[in-house]
Image 1 (cartoon, rainbow, N blue to C red):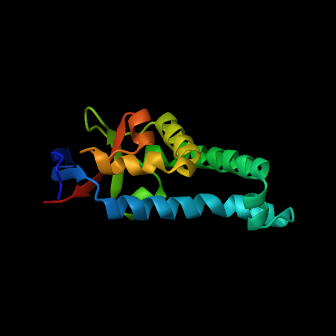
Image 2: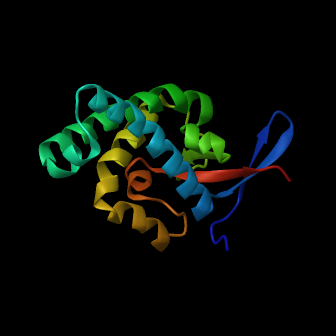
Amino acid sequence: MNNAPNMTSNNQNSKIILSVAPYYKRLGAFLFQLLLSLIPIFLIAYLLGYNFSDFIENIALFALGLIFIGVCSSGLGVILYPVYQGNIGHKLFNLKVVDADTGLSIHSPSHGALRGFLKVCLVPLLIPILIIFINKKRQTLWDKMSNTRVVCEKNP
């Protein structure tokens, strides 16, 4: 059930309806982007002789890996947000990031960098993800901190 209001926008003479992104699409996009972000850190770690258990057992190595993933995610945000209004996971699931107040598309590289870094840093805490279930706009903590929300595009 979608409790949040729909918005419409005109895109090259065709009307597009924007609705709050369903949970399953957000989860799918999040997991896809997370896996994509983890590839470089595990590849570099493997080349340096580390394995996954090393990251679990050594908190400093885990923190360093988290910071590196945050930087990679921020870099991807800088590149992808101007093009896709989100990350590759958003594009794959037909989602886009909009301003929470106005509903206007986010094309800003700085928003992409901020959201990417916040997401990586806040995910291990788990609560920032679960907050999505207690608000009508289905915003995570990084959505709230960057004043954005994720919507799904539908052609009528």
